[in-house]
Length: 76
Image (cartoon, rainbow, N blue to C red):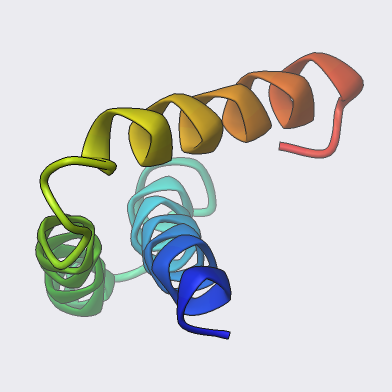
């Protein structure tokens, strides 16, 4: 279960942060949207540091693989 949160937590934080910036730039939302975006991306980076260092490479590779597949398939 902890492994699930090691992937899901950073993924959700990254999606939320990137959406906030996208909404600001593309949907002409208020610059106030940048505040939760920055906080969310900071949380994303922090959560990635919680993974044990000996498995961090595999975690980042799996995370990157999911990101690439989602981008190519149109779901990202």
